[in-house]
Picture 1 (cartoon, helix red, strand yellow):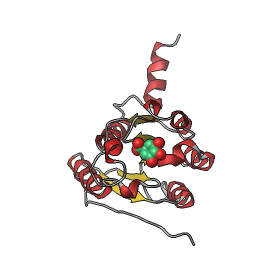
Picture 2 (cartoon, rainbow, N blue to C red):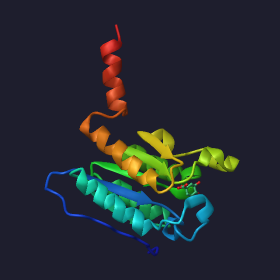
Picture 3 (cartoon, protein in one colour):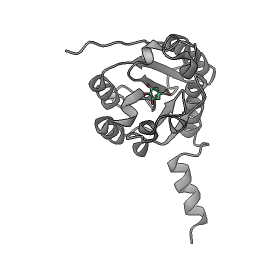
Length: 179
Ligand code: DQA
């Protein structure tokens, strides 16, 4: 069995509050030491702590996990609905640009998923300009450093509250303006 690396941060919140799964892919366990000029000096553990506090303040919960292994991420995405999660925040790392298997996993998971990145991949090397995952996602947040995780949490909660700009809301707006 493939080795797993996992950083977890959970906070208690009232029963019935939305529970969001926060996934980070390969090399993100090295945040803080990995190319800080691109990714900043905040560690993933610090991001998870902050996110847990922000979720709690909004009456929600997060469970944060990290893996360097594509199959582990696929397993987590595939079981997210059965585990009671309402949405997924996903930084797929370099798998963003290569993984049809993760695209399939997100497409089939039946949960709104937000792709997020610390850096802005569109402003970097050409290979980063293509996301294999994006077409399966509700939306994407990129380029705001560690704050991208907080912005993605806000976007997911707004979507779940029905006040965001997600696909279901776009559809609803479209219906009211269509002939
Ligand atoms: C990243 C961007 C990816 O292109 C890169 O491979 C990463 C990190 C980001 O958060 O900016 O590992 O997902």
